[in-house]
Length: 144
Image 1 (cartoon, rainbow, N blue to C red):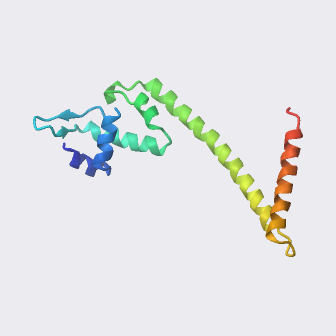
Image 2 (image 1 turned 135 degrees about the vertical axis):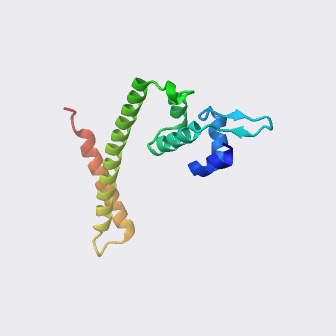
Image 3 (image 1 turned 30 degrees about the horizontal axis):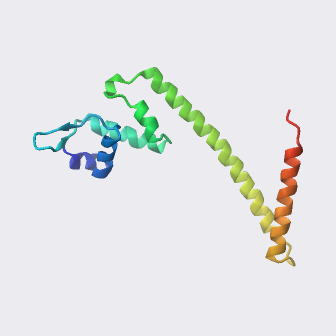
């Protein structure tokens, strides 16, 4: 199939498909006598895998190392290991995001607790002072 049909079937721009080919992610491309690219059916699957993997957090360099030249040559154990590591990475990120969210919500609560008779500059000093006290208390804790 030509690049236009592949683009329609994968909802990717032809320039994106050529980019994936240029960086070595899409390796199943053949050239016709007239110079046009010709893609086999497997190209649809490969591009769908790339798109799905990117949505799951894989970087292009990770995908380049993961994708075999031929889909049938995929090493099951390597694939499972890579996917498990990515799940662990996402779980670590989720913990970090939850902590960041908690910090932001606490900061928001402090800012919103501005006394009615206090101007914004004084409230900012109050909030920063409370943040510093909280940080000092946290740094004095002894590790268990």
